[in-house]
Amino acid sequence: CACTNQPGDELFVPDRDVLVEASCVLADREPVSVGFVTTSELPSKLGTLCLSSDSLPSTADTTCSDLAECSTSNAPSTPSMEKSAQSMFDDHNTPIGGERAAEEGRYADRAPDVRSALSSNELAAVLALKGELGEAGVEAVHDILVEGEALESCLLRFLKPKSFYVSRAAKSLRAHLTWCASTKPADLAELTPGEICGCTEELLDRYLPTWHQGYDRQGRPVVFSHYGKFRFGPVLEAGVTVEKILQLHIRNSECTARLCGRQSIKLGRDISTALIVMDVEGLDPNSLRHRCAFEWIRGLAKIDQEHYPERLGQVLIINAPSCLHYFYKSISWTLPQKACSLVRIFGSRATWEPVLLELVDASELPPQYGGSGPTLTLMESPSQ
Image (tube, rainbow, N blue to C red; front, side, top):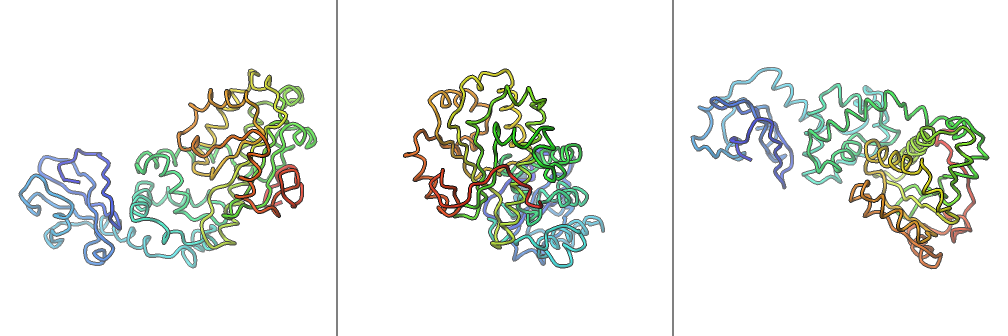
């Protein structure tokens, strides 16, 4: 991490507590953002430094530790720069909730403080992403948080798929904010499946049932989808388009996010992922060859990757016929590698039931899945 990096380079230094941006103005060079200090150094050294070439050591390989030792008394500063640094300091130390949450008018006061569970690298990346988004951007993210979701948890979900490259995560998050403004997933979550698809609930329960079935042993929501009952023909004939089916998926994803938020409040720790069980018993192989099948699959993958990243805790595909293995292999290249690693495919009941009961207590599961809990149907909105 040297001052000789080119302008616009993304810098990452591991095993540090807090990232501090220092705009280093060198001779004949544009400003570059560098600088890491530990939390113990923050009170005396936190500040956006504008260091002239005279205030730096003469070596061309000036490092971040060299910058930390440079006296700020010799460095010119501006009120806006000091305000930026102080904002980072205040944001790092102000607890989530209380007066800050009341001013923001969101749900942070009920969300658990997840920062103590973050590594130093994760915390540094979160702080850097906040800075990249700016005050208006952070406020916009607050506006889309579900009840019980901490801001840091949301930011991490967009940082992880981008390998913690802050600028890429910020670009993805801005695109997501634009999508939320046009698609309005929070409004979709308030509608019933029938209202979204423009058909009867009975049709969806027969051909595309998805429901929430309690929580697993980690506290994650358990969501079942019986895709083996899905038939494109009758659904399309009823006037339900692929676009509407994808809107239904958005609605169910938003409901699942709300369930995660409520579990976070209840358990006092971050719950941001769900266990998804896909039952494909009775799957018609012809449905996989339907002209709309790949459009539907691509749409699901795009929604999950771009707008609900890091929401999949684990996916169990049960009662899978051999043809599904080949189909999954043909479309798995469209999915992120991490997502593929979370998917497990099982054939017979003897193979999947012990695994499911290991993850979920029997009292949470219906009898047809080896449990003693109630049999549920279409997924309801947590607010309904």
